[in-house]
Image (cartoon, rainbow over all chains, first blue to last red; front, side):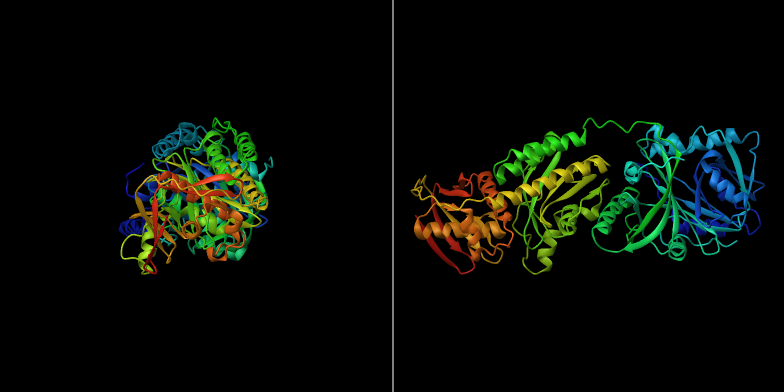
Amino acid sequence: MSTTAYATPIDDQISWREAAHTHLLPAHLVAFLQGGVTATLGARSASGRPIIGAGVACRVRDMTEVRVLLSQTANAALIEAVMNGSAVAATFSRARDHRSIQLKAARASIRDTAHDDQCEAARQTALLADELMELGYTRSQADAYAFCGTTDLVSLELRPERVFTQTPGPGAGAELPR
Amino acid sequence: MTAPDLRALRGAMEGISASTLCTCDVDGVPNASMISQVHWVDDAHVALSYQFFNKTRANLLATKQATVQLFDPWTLAIYRFDLDYVETRTSGPLFETMKAKLAGIASHHGLEKVFRLLGADIFRVVRIEEVVPPSAAPSCRGVSFLSAARSCIEDLARCRDFDELADAALDGMVGHLGVGNAMLLMAECDGRLFALGSRGYAVSGIGAEILPGEGVIGVAAREGVPIRIGHFSADYRYGAALGAAARSAGLLAEAPAGVPFPGLGTPHSQIAVPVMAEGRVLGVLFAESAETLHFDHEFEDALVLVATQLGALMALLRDEETDEAPITEADTADAGGTVTVRHYPRDDSVFLGHDYLIKGVAGAILWRLLREHAATGRTDFTTRELRLDRSLKLPDHAENLDARLVLLRRRLEERCACLQLEKTGRGRFRLVSRCRIELEDAGQGEASAVA
């Protein structure tokens, strides 16, 4: 079992306050998003129902735009909802300490992947799978949970308008003001 | 899209992997989060753990809709359920089942002080999506639980009395269901339970007591529902509460006399299944393991089948009792020595010399037999006369009488006491003393001698 101390919402608030007050996303958040974390996506369907999706990896462009790479076939309903103009939520969570951050935007776009996205997705899913194995998952469980080897990727791209700490504990769900 | 049966997806609801959840607010803004527990309720419903009043909770109350994604670690499949909110339960069997499971999950993740169940949110599953189909066969356990349950039930059907039933249930758990540590406990009318037998422990623990609501055993008995946890949780430990409760009630200045609970020090998996008949909890079948996540839904199903059959047979035996009381010569064997038997009316505890033997109804029964023996020299008795003896304050449904006689006899056997109870037929038994016995009622300070 891991002996790493678990994260708390207070940690997120402190590191957020320490970041420069610019339109750029703080460097520590960018590092977190690109470091092999799980990505849970949310949207709303045309009929008004919540839709859940799962990202495979995340890349941040110009320290402002968050690109979540996701399987097209496994997220067809979510992709359709986003293309229809749904607001988007994306929660990123690190397996080893439960640190979790939620980004929200009123809209997002779906684009083709860049030429090196597949390699980066492979790197991030491998990191996540290794971490899960340290927590007791078997190799096949970890690879499946981390979506290792997913090839039909598209890119869901958003500019975060609001950021929340979702790390479990007192203060969970608090907005990190920008 | 396929539409798998919800029951077949229970592997994804064992709480092994975190599930994810999405809700929307009234303006259509989604909220994505992790959820500690998606609990299988029945073919059409699941329950989610409500632990905090947060955005998810606000959205659920406002829009009554959610969607969850689950991972089955056995088949590696991924599913999504669309859910419609039905109600929230804050007490009762389902709530207690989820509370126990959550305590184990919280402990496993180092979040004991963070996770606390406020409610069980029940949802109707309106749609199931198989996102990633199963790619692995469910792990081979080496035991087919349906077949194992059948063997257990066949063994139970061969039993002729309560004693044999208790042994067959425990032996079946070990021999057929592959349990390493098993226990059968019977319920007192005040909600306490006492261990009647066990397998797999260094000491049998016969006579050990569990307080109402203590650990998974106490909760299972109180709620009449199986309780199963897959990780060690300090909230569901045994033993410590007993002494503390007695001391706080001002009963004792020191730890109370009793038989220590024989359970594992750090059980990582525990399951307690109520033994029921006619809507009442007669006792609990308990199993534990040092391995995490050792007992799954399928094992629980099997143990419930065994417990149900055990309860029905216990009730049946009670109804078939004989009432003849054979008269035989008193056993006057006197191997020498004198033992003082002390009785404390406060809790009907009985001591042989200075050693604690038993308490509660079983203690009252022994005291009654000894007094009658002292007065009349009688040694042969029937369960029927005990059942009709109002001084024993037996509950109306007295299959527990059989359990108490078995408990009493096993305690005496274990102690190799100079006193023994011997079965002489169905519903009949004999008090055998191999030494001179003096009775001392500690409550009234009087002593009398028995030949």
